[in-house]
Image 1 (spheres, rainbow, N blue to C red):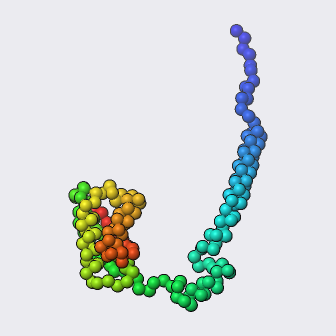
Image 2: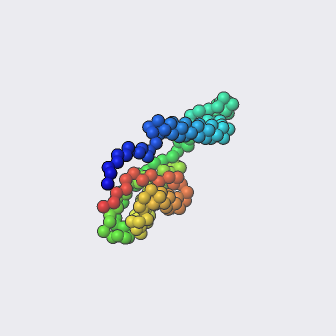
Image 3: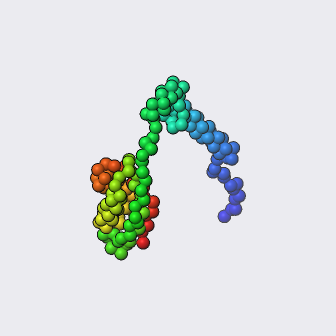
Length: 174
């Protein structure tokens, strides 16, 4: 048997080819990004003027006279008679699991001052409602939003529409 020497054969692409491919793909990505940015910017150009007009604190020149008239007539003023009342804290256990306790402190926003018994009535209604809850109903952000919406609905019903918002100050589970 004869010993023959063979040279190693390179089976990969050269470094120059790899760098060229990388530069080509990068240029393609930049081009696609630029085109899509121009497309989206051109599509929303008409809506940016509407958004600027609706931005809080910014008044377009054509609306300045209308704003001045509203201020003179008192039409654009916020209602000064809104009242925030802090309710007594609620500490109770949940319906399921019954070994989980909840502590909630809340406030209500009234459109005008009401009789002194209304906050106590709403607080008792909140207590009765919280005792019927199960833990899985309050879990997560959407569960919290549903919980707050339920409280606002119950408060509006009890106050005959005078409660405009429920502010949950503290919500703890143990």
